[in-house]
Length: 232
Image (cartoon, rainbow, N blue to C red; front, side, top):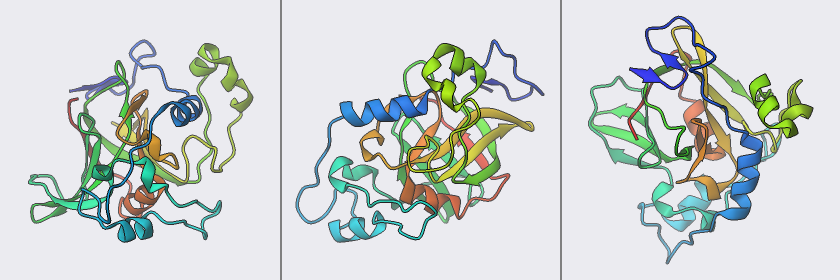
């Protein structure tokens, strides 16, 4: 099975096979301006979470290194809010399953259940599927655009030495890095403070969760956790 970056069975990925990385800073800024908001109706969301609970779950995180604002719940379709769902799977507890077709990320909880998070995924031409694993994790990471991106998008050149952590950093507060056979695939599961992006195909293959959801997943996900990306 092949991920765009290279084959599962290969020890190294060829430069030709490696897909173009997104300029996450650009797509996040563009998406914020271009995507429409979806409002909540009544006192409860369609996903079974009350408005009061959603405001609590997606409230501010003031004790973070860079305080994280509350999510504007009116800007996300309620079906993408975090919830526990029935999900039959033979995968081990803790396995992460990404369903790009439906914009969901699942964490297997066992007993036929999973925690489900809404996500943004790769846009057309950058979708991929296959098995990977969490090779490393980082809190408030530095984002360094690769040389290929800088050549393609010169506006990224000022960050050749790395963009410092912060709310404007494309990787956000938490990042899980996807590996295959000891090699970083260039794909990540990252956090975003932009609810407008959830339920959209906007990236070059990376998967974004609301920061509050990403912190929840990150805290339960050790290095070497299996990740399965379903076909789109």
